Length: 399
Image (cartoon, rainbow, N blue to C red):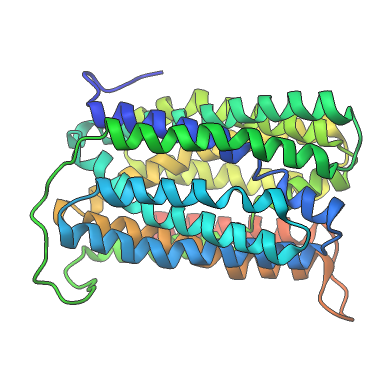
């Protein structure tokens, strides 16, 4: 994997932190919709609402946290605090007997993510030269997805040993995995506290409120196009439920997700380095086009091997867009003193849009109340169409 020369300490430490955190979170996040559906008998529409509320919470906090880190001129404390809050939320899943407790867990967990994300991204961008941003963010995303891959492998071992190849998730299996996941979540907090070095910027303590004035208009346009794309990008919980609907067992679903993260890990670094050479916008467009193809595939797939191929392509989409988009934000906002707010706005827009996207996706699939939905294919075809429209706008409008 191509890497920037002499990778700074902060990039390595934050990459290790993300790896450990994702070992913990990925053991749980994809099993959570199965826990809600199989154990607590929650409807798909409500699952979409829970995920949407959780992401909305994170998004609102991301905007404020990014601005606050700009105001203080410090990023480390908020980053560590966010990881710590998410770790403290995990024991809630050990006692969850109803869906409101799961919602509370997701709320607190996503609040922690909201607190840490923008300051962490700003720390990375300020720790490297501009010519190395793509590769550095690619390295960070690769470590993140590597942790997810390891976490899923551990989850596979637990499921295999405790319940075999059953289609439905067992409550005892899930809670055992939760207890084990608390270990790497705690280690992630310790690593960021001990290892990260603060990168001081000129704080904007005199700024009384958040303001988006003075940003490059292209940044605003990029946020608009990203919002349109995300409206069709409902929660990934729907992908898990779609695979189960197609006959995949819990064990098979975990294997599919492990394959997704393996591809994501292998391609994130090269994709970031490629964006340093050919431009971020072209790489993002390629990723969004791939997304459109993948979602059409999810709409009609009905065999486990088909879902395996689609999940692998989905990993390539993430590699082409996730870290590259964050590097693009830094390109469009050259002032380090405003990047915290910029990353908060970007991550906030993505997360805020997940709520309507997930609610719409759930309604399209299963309907609401007495009104029936259009079936499992509908949310995926909807997402594919919006992604194509977003590609056109990104190409023609954001130069």
